[in-house]
Length: 614
Image 1 (cartoon, rainbow, N blue to C red):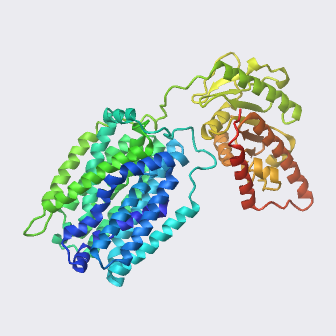
Image 2 (cartoon, rainbow, N blue to C red):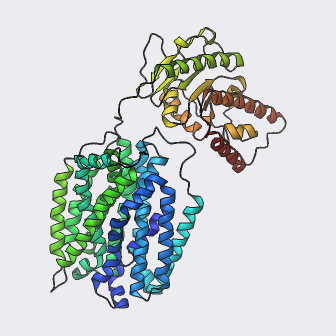
Image 3 (spheres, rainbow, N blue to C red):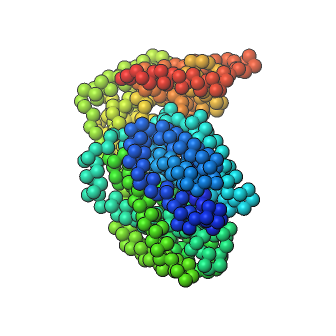
């Protein structure tokens, strides 16, 4: 996805830093050249709705694939017919049609592959790829055009677009094998009630106003970057570098600011801070003549407008709930495209006839930034990023009783199998997305009754009744939270697994049933004291993409989509550990090829995930 996002922005800003050369080559006025960049905004407005619909109903892989193919096909057409301005214009419109399918997929991809407290970071990385394309367009295009000529430059862009499309089509997948988090992806279909809710959502309306101005300013400034600086003695290559610095700093900011936002679990302060930083940057671009001060001003603008962009779009997806991610992104992007067109024409209209300066237009844009600051102060924090989700859904009594019986029976079976002894070990079963049933603390398995099983809220780990849940309830709760497909968790101290855990040896895929049911290896979680946050963290990490993991100097944890699958994982783990130990005496086990082991595991997951688990 990242190469395709980069390439669409290369095509967007191809002509922005070489406006003068393009005017001379095609013998057309500057506004005709500006239209080639502005076409992206016009086409986006027309294509935003169908692109969002495709993203939200068919998934981001089909949407991004469509956008990548449009970029590749029409990008190549630009190079083939580079000498004909009319055909280049039509080809640019075709390339522009691909952009909405690409950019509207960013928040959908983040929701599908990442938990909620990592989504701004994921969106930032994807957006960073687009910014890298802008840097390439603004900085490299003037040099490529000067060395190879305009036609050859457009051909090179076409070849690159084809390569980016092929990379995505060959390697992209719609879903991770292991879901990233507990169902915050907005999967329902758009309806009239959702749109009416947006009209009354004051935070979303304020965000729309902010992005209308900020994105419009960025689009207008990047389109006229050469023309607005030329009257101050700035050359075309220098203008390209200034624009490139703006995007390059924005590229860095698009990683740092989303990570900061996710770590601190805040959106609002990041957005307000971005406006505060953008104001002096805009002032510098409007009035400075020094090349180095212009570089500094461009850096501030890039950090503010581009660095905070992923945070703004993720904030929009969160406050627009239950609007699907692709639709909320499309609405916000459309506002920026509309304002971009208005501001581009406005800057041209405000150009001085005598000197060609655009100071008046830039001053008006600076005033709009102060207005945006006032609007942004009215934003409220996203409740989703703070973890304030709707109240937990209470399970049905019959579901609780069924789960209690399952856990009680499995506990006695676990004791009979020899995987635990006395009161050691623990096991649980998910009841629904908000509750689990877990064995009590300090009770012998042979004396357990279904009524002894403890019902625990997964969110705050609260429980009712006189019996305390297992001391490892935090580990069980975190596994259920991070692995929504998991329905049962078993913590054992089986002999062979404990032996390998004490040796801290990772088990390669030595048996085919191990590869199928557990995964392409059995990792060993670093040692941590029982019932600690460190134990939870290292265990969840070791379990990623696996159905079992060893706990150093402790035991093992096995999981499954139901209790039976988790129990089978325990049996296969114990069998694999025994085979591993015995094979060491024969010179060491010869593992299955890792790729083949992964294929077997994926086949197992896909084949049996279609069956209903209880």
